Length: 291
Image (cartoon, rainbow, N blue to C red; front, top):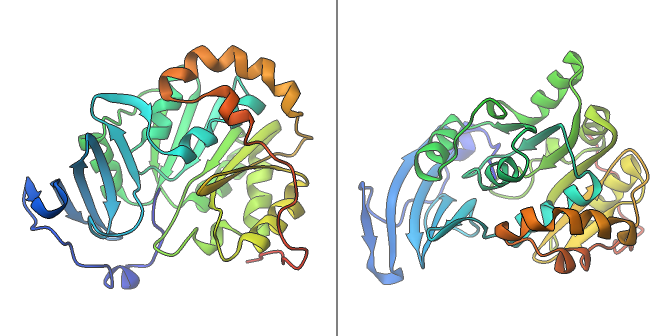
């Protein structure tokens, strides 16, 4: 996940709770801080705890984690939401091009690159310091098909439209200290995302189940894409597209075909398919979000 706040707001970031050192032991929480860095956007903290290496913005005590991997099983996806994002492959199993807005430690693009080595994956991250940390501490290794771009996500989508580039899957995973940046929530932005998708393409959006704009957010996605799938845990993943979505039963054969490649990542087909829901669980009073 990445942050999109102005430099002025960054000055209000929480102070780091551990001493800035190459390796710092935080005895009270049994946490070892191995890197801290203040970028133009964030205080970036890399630490190890309970067999995991993680990235946070702000401080070790700040809520939420941007990225984590298990030190003894780095290929396994730690976060439930990342496993749910892989549900997009049940809708579009053989993508030629994927766009991901938001890098964090790069666990999701790296995992996708592992199972889809010939797919071009463009990951967009606004903070060059996050890119550097992902490469140094999270084994993020861009190459000819796994590419990273330092840019604003919406500007990247708009540039892709101008250049005629289209994507089979667009993954939205960008957050600031409050929630998803407002310019990445609006009808106008989602219309741009829809336009950059190929026919039959899929958008996978990481959102929060407890978001205060849940009703408005849902109404906006429905306004742009029509019916969509909700996958809910602590996070809510929206799967939508410009074309009618297949039924869950129709996806079972695709899920079975992908399962040998996804099991090492921790993606269980039966558990994931059980979370697909097209039920409207938002209030009819929800409003369409606009620029």
